[in-house]
Structure formats: C-alpha cells, structure tokens
Image 1 (tube, chains in turn green, brown):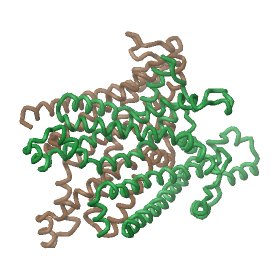
Image 2 (cartoon, chains in turn green, brown):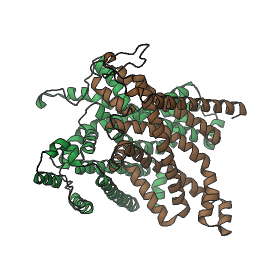
Image 3 (spheres, each protein chain N blue to C red):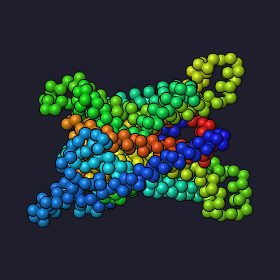
Image 4 (cartoon, rainbow over the protein chains, first blue to last red):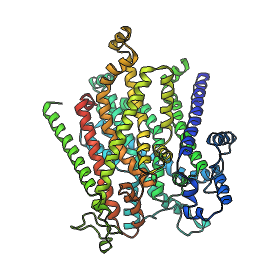
Length: 330
Length: 273
C-alpha cells in the first residue's frame, strides 16, 4: 500500500510539473500573438475617436503595457492561491465563468465519453473476433468514413436533418430561446443536449473501435489461444475468456486517453450548436484575446487530460494483480 | 501479398493520387472563377448548370468547393511535410542522444499531448497571427509529438541491435550512426506516417478555419464555406453545407486510402496485423 502511494505521489508530482509547463507554454503563445486585443475588441473606428488617455486606460485593462514575464509571474502567484484572474470579456472571475460553463459541458462530455467508449469497445471486439469477415469489413469501413468526417460538418448535417428538416429537436443553445430561466425544465435542457452529445459520441467511436480491434487480434494470435483451441475450447468462449480479459488494460488506457479527444471535439461541436459550454468559451476567449480565460481553460483541460492518464495508471493495479505486485517491488 | 495484389495496390494508389492531383489543379485554375459574384443567379439550388448550387452572392459553389479543396490539399502537403520532418529530427535526436536531451524532449512531447489538439492549434494560430501563416504553423507544429514518440521508441529498440553495438564499439560517432543506420531503417515508417498525416492535416486545417482561427474569410476555404453556410441553414439552403462537406470527406478518405496503400507497399508486415 505504501508503495502504491509512493507511485501515485511520483505521478502527481510529474503531473504538477507538466501543468506548470502547459500554463507557461500557453501564456508564451498568447503573449507572442501579434494580434492587438484593443483592435479586435474595440475596433479600429472606435479607437480613432478616443483620446490617448482612454486608449492608455484600455491598454492597461488588456495588459498590453506590462512586460510578459511579469504578467506570467503575477498570474502564477495568484493562480497558486486559487485566483485565476478576471475574464476580460465576461468581466467575472475566470473560476466563475469556467464553473458555469463546465456545468453545462460536463453532462455532455461525460455522456459522450461513456457512450463512445462502450460503443467503440463493442464494435472493436466484434470486428476483431470476426476478423476479415463481413462484420469486420463493415465496421472498418464505417470507422474509416467517420474518422475522415470533420466533427463540425457531422454536427451541421445532424442539425440539418433533425432540427431544420424534421424539426424534432431545437437548432441550438442549451435552453429555449427567450424562456425565463426559472421556467426551463430538465426536459428542455435534455432536448437541447441530445444533438451535441450524439455528435460528440459518434466522432469518438472510430479510434477506440480500431484500436480495440487491433489489440484483440494481437491477443487472439498468442500461443495460449492456439492451445485453448487445441484443447477444443469454442471460439466464442476463447474470445470471452482469453480475449476480453487480456484487452481490459489497453481498453482502459484507450478510454482514458480519449478524454483529450472528447474535450477537443466539444470545442467544435459546441460552436456549431451555439451550446454555451466550455468549448464555446474557449473559442470566444481566443477570438477576443481574453488571455486569463483562455489560460484558465487550457490549464483546466490539461489537468483533466493528465488526470485521465493518472486514473488509468492507478486503475491498472486494481484490475491486474500482477501489476499491483510489480509496482510494489519497484 | 503476392505480386498481383501488389500491382493492384500500386494501381489504386496511383489512381487516388491522380484524382487528388486533378482536384488540386482544377481548384487552382478555378480560383478566380470562385470569386465571381453575380446577383442575377443568387441562391440557386443545385441543378445541371450549377451542380453544387450558388450562394447568396451568386458564386458558383462547385468552383468555390474545388478551389477550397485545392487550397486545403496544398496546405495539407506543406504542413504534413513540415511536421513529419520535425518529428523525425526530434524523435531520432531524443533516442540517439539520450540523457538530458531525451528527458527534455519526452517532457515536451507529454506537454504537447496534454493540451487537447484543437485548443493547442488555436493557441499556436494566435501566436502566429492567424491567417495563412497561422494555419500552417498551427497544424505543422501540433502534429509532430505522437509521431516523434513512435519514432523515438523505434530507435530505442534499434539501439540495442548487435550491429549498432558493433558500430559503437568501432568508434563510429553518434551522429554518423543516426545518419547511416537509424535514418535508412526509419524511412519506410517515416514515409507512411507522412502520407497518413495528410488526412489529419486537412481535417484540422478545415476545423480551425471553421472556428475563425485560420484562413481569412475572403479565401475560398472549406472551413470558411461551411462556417458561412451556418447562417443559411434555417432558411433551407442545405446545399451550401452538404456538398462542400461531402467533397471534403471524399478527399480525406482518398488520402487515408492512399496512406494505407503506401503502407502496404513499403511495409508489407503491417498488412498482417
């Protein structure tokens, strides 16, 4: 147990260092941007009519005059105390904006993450077990087609069919347009989340399915599978007993590695459906040059990705006793 | 794979390459035609004259789509090449030099892979001021980490091969070993990865342009076309979104198939798995 803790501690330290690196890299990239936040947000015409004092005040607000390293230092020391600054676009603390957005996005992403994982695993197993037969060919073709489809176009297509053409589902946002916040029911929210969640799940399936298939095929080529066959074990039970058990670990890795893809996909999908989630806030912050907000979102998503990897590492030991003992020795 | 299916594979690869070349050339030739506005023919649904229909400024959507695809393919070629070379240099350097170089590069690779791809590309594009330069920088500087990691592990395996050890003991310098032994060994994998990078590069170019971090709105890029079509969806102009998207999917599928074929030809063992 003590060794497990040491193992987790080491991983946590590495994660903290990586997060520090991510925040610095993201800051450098944003600070290096030649785009003038004043011109993008205030507009050239409005700037022309302003006095130089007004412009100087705006420049202070958007942090143009402070040297980049000093800005990063200030940001970091505040961030370590839990203060991620104030969003320049929304004029609210970054933590508040992210909190609100995360609540809207989280349901979407968790649903898509679980559905894509389950569906991808299932399809991958079927394809692997029926290697080179019809089900495999169909699944592989479907996966190739899906992985070649940009997720935002798929979102537009679903929007065209289900919202514009059939009119079954709303075309965007997370609540009915013009509705009073108090009168919005859970059903309304669910109806608005169906299409984004569906798009996100569909786009997550191919990579999981194809990788699961490859792993299952690898396992089924092992000597112990040949031996099981020689003993007369049926193919069905070989796949269930030897196949599934041995791809449990890679499947877990895949599932947690897909966190990054789901987070990235949500940026595009939320943009199409005007869904007021984290991804849409990231785009708004990027377009508007809202450095504190974009930095906060980047650090948070990176933390989720690293957290996913850490969870996979820790769960290995739970699933496979050999790793538990191995980690204890190391 | 017998010689017959090798020939068929080669034929298919050449066919795919020819179609892509044709799209590129046609798109470049149609670049000016794609800009022509004519309000006497605006908002026409697809017909025999206007196969993909026209938009609200009377621009021919077929010409715009082809011009956009051509632009995407050219950007895809450029970015895939840059990122693959970057991955090769950094991956081989990390594994061959070892020590602190390896630690630093591995850490940087982890760092890059930790930021969701689309977010990373947004940040990179911002740093280079969006536009053409922004897209090229974003796509080429964000695609190398996973390939670099793959090549690094390949070289690490190779490092313990007897003939490399012998070369080391004979006093061949690390740089010479990298150049004479590692690079030739990695070449097939590198070329395959290069071709397989195209589809991703094209998709990602379209994605960040769609989000407004890429090519400017005067360009006939697929991302621009699709993001403009969003305003006209509810008014029933489905053709503005459907055909350009389908064409993009077609090009990406062709590139992916081409990549598979190239892999089958260069690295026959991979077909087995």
